[in-house]
Amino acid sequence: MVILFFHFFFLIQHILFFLGPLYPINGIASSQSDDGSSPQISLNRPFVFFGQTYNQIYVNHNGHLTFDAAWSSFSPQMFPMHGSRDIIAPLWVDLDNRENGQVYYNQYNSASVLQQVAYYPTTGTRTTVQAVLISGGQYSFVLMNYGVIAATSRHIQAGYDTVHSAHHFSIPGSFSSNSSGPDSNFRLSSNVNVAGRWAFRVDRGSTGCTFNGNTRTRGSPRITLLRPFVYFGQTYNYIYVNQNGHLTFNAAWNSYTPQRFPMHGPRDFIAPFWTDLDNRGNGHVYYNQYTTGSVLQQATQDINTHFPGLNFNANWVFVATWYEVAYYPNSGTVSQHSVTDLLQKHIS
Image (cartoon, rainbow, N blue to C red):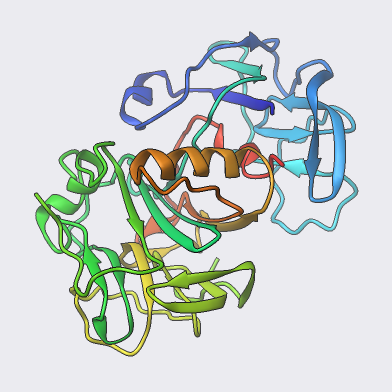
């Protein structure tokens, strides 16, 4: 297993301490040049990117990674480009590190790495949230991970609910002033003693779980799951990633007004961050499935840590990430960030 880190460190030194669970910012510094690039970097392990295997990579200074050659493009283009190159562009914009800032890159051959989660910026702040679905044999789990939660006056619902609310969970802080900002309960608390993480076994459970102590509303198309996912006794083969911070199974859902759990409604869904979001100006909603690789190893380790005694082995992981999406109507806001998450999504 190899983990690759690429850190674009422009104009952000003064805010890094507020970005949540960042990985160490270190490694080899690329040259200080406008529209420059790293030299060709030989990878310690082959990297498979959507069926294409690469043994080298280039870290370009304008916020993107390429595989076949360095690339100096400073004018971002909208995806899909229908172009001739594979590219990963966490922050493609015209950057210049001649006066200040560094571009670092590093490789790790032995490390357990938890994927970093998404940012939802608004007026210079950012919100970080991720939903991870994990399946292995007879067991199913949901992890909800939280970083910085941007302050907002909007209501936020976090947790999950099932058909007719036979099973439900509302993370404490939902529909309260403690849902966002520096004192967000989502980020500071936990049900597994890891601040900012909420972990749930969802293949079965008791009734009524309790806590001890580029469109505005459209969702993803129907996603066929590579493994069936059992959610409180109901087996699903499809899922929808909806723009407003929730996942559904039977149909897409554009609801942007959060409701309190239990809803006693007709649908099963999972809501790591249900609120009115808008990615028309900036931001993306990503989803990915894994059946091999380091993500499964990390999921296996996490579940066995949080749910000891199961001897669990993950054979499938689904990750949904709401990345740089603004609160409505504050579309068009921008954030700077450390870049470690996008490449890791495709390690296999």
